[in-house]
Amino acid sequence: MTSGGITSSAPGRRAWVGVCLLLVLLTAAIYGRVYRFEFVNYDDGRYVTENAFVMRPFTADSLRWAFTTGYFANWHPVTWLSHMLDYRLFGTNPAGHHVVNVLIHALNAILLFEVLRRASARVGGKTRAFWCSALIALLFAVHPLRVESVAWVSERKDVLSACFGLLALLAYVDYTKRPAIGRYLLIVPPFALGLMSKSMLVTLPVLLLLLDYWPLRRFECEGASSGTALRRWFWLGVEKVPLFALSLGTVLIAIQLKSPQTASAQARAGQALLATAGYIWKTLWPSRLAAFYPHRGASVTWSFALLLCAVLGAISIVAFCNWRKRPYLTMGWLWYLGALAPASGIVQIGDHGMADRYTYLPTVGLYVMLAWSLGDWARGSRARARAGGAVASAVLVAFSVVAWRQAGYWRDSETLWRRAVAATEDNEMAHVKLGTALMARGAYAEAAAQFEEALRIRPDSDRAVNNLASLRLSEGRPGEALTFATRALAMNPDNPLAHINAGIALASLERMDEAMAHFTEALKLEPGNQDAHFNLATAFYLRREYENAATHFGETVRADPFDVRAHFGLGVCLFSLARFDEARDAFERVLRLQPNHAEAKDYLARMPQAAGS
Image (cartoon, one colour):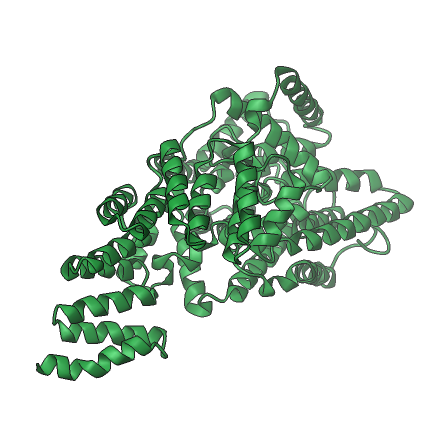
């Protein structure tokens, strides 16, 4: 930390600037190369590169969509607006999208430092509070568990919600020093924006109560009876009622959008134990980090569950037994449990069992426990202060190196999923995603091997089978593709992508009526699916049903205004229907998107003669 240790010198403005500068420099050193990274095939398409609403200009429709959609089982309008703004600024160049994440993370580290510094100024002296707060913020900035939230474009919701949450905490700390209605109201906007960025922030009012306990110590009254202390806790809770109301509203929305609970209650409880203990271990020893961890809850035996309960129980006993002497242990432990609760695994959010991104704010509680314990140990001894500073510096350097290496795995989809396969066992999702990445660069044999491995791990994986269907279509083998698509539909009849693959295979085999039935079914399952619309439009065009074809090409360009093929198909249909003015507009849009499109130029050249005849 400093040459004199972590508690040796009184901090001033220069020290504050130095810590903030160090936070920025370390963040830049770890994540400075992400501007060269690509989008990855893990939600980035749905969030940015294939999302028509994100790619459209800001309109009343796009804004309405952002605030009303439950797309991808999430309600986070502010996150959508953030991606829309990025697309206006950077388009499909991933560099800017990545850099914005890094900048927000650096800001979050500074905000966390400032929140803790101000909140703990009255606890244990300003010097110790300053350096413990600095250590916590530095751990937060450089820890390898942060990499997923920062280096992954789709996790903008994580850094953004944390930013607003920390602003709310900062406003709250200022309010507690000089309580007033106006200052209280300043807490509400950032908290609301944070909830509209990611619903995991719903437990923030509980975190405020923990700050009241320590380090703000708002519950303490000199010479007060236990009854008075209880009444004080009660009124501190009442004070948070408007914030709890915002959280409740967000929870009700989340319940409406929650993912199907495919795991049993016992499996979810087992996974929650694994995750709660696992994140602690990964905080202390961040190895074998991966973009996706399979759900292991069903494999947790009763004996192992009891062992995990014993470990977590032991930590709880130590934390609660020190609630007076070392209140930072109690506060830090409850912060970790409370902030993690929405994503602990009790409520299944997806197919994964754990995710590094869920630790973004919860592990601050663990850092509080570690940093203040080190500060207590070093207090009153120059030698211990120096030793503590050396230990802290060594840990920060080690974490920074590991985080820099971990960030490198996010450079592209293939690197990301090769790492996930190496770092985990029997990871069906990682094999499927790796196969998809390999297929995208034409490595069909390697891709097929990955899909087959995914099927070995999970024989009922309809996504692996459907990807084999896509692969066979890419290889020009529609018969085999139809076999795989049919198999995928037998596993999951409600898979729209399998219907589309079956339809494309059938169309290639000149079984057009059956193909169109599959495209229609895909649209019933996922209204607005642009691939289904495009293929249905193509089928109608081949049958010379130009009106119907134009309708579906129109729906395709409405879903994706940048689809050159759909614009061109729409123009051809309108030309065939002698709707020349509309056809001209369609071909001109094609040329705006692709200036060298020869066929569009040819149709425009023929337009005057066709219109005159």
